[in-house]
Amino acid sequence: MAYVKKERKRIKKCKLCRDNVEYIDYKDVRKLKEFMNDKGKILPKRINGNCAKHQRMVRTAIQRARKMMLVPYVNE
Image (cartoon, rainbow, N blue to C red; front, side, top):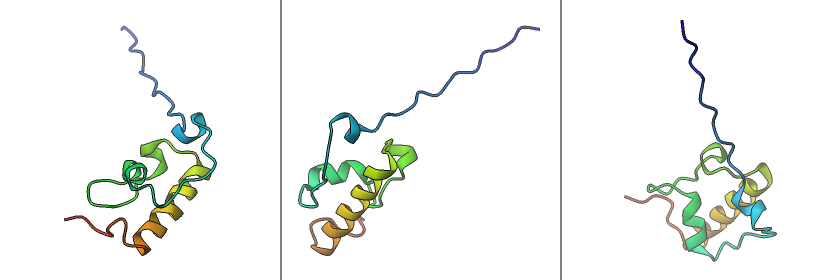
């Protein structure tokens, strides 16, 4: 029998680490929407490829933007 090679998953690199991002501004709505799905939920780090440090920064920025009504809690 022939052996079938398994395809290896490509490891996602953190976009924010590559760009040397120090702080994620909650007023930058366009950048925050990259880390949200179409319903307004925050995407997990395994999907968007963030490291733990930047995922926490994204989460707090989105939560602040929601409190300031810059980003809706739920899109319909």
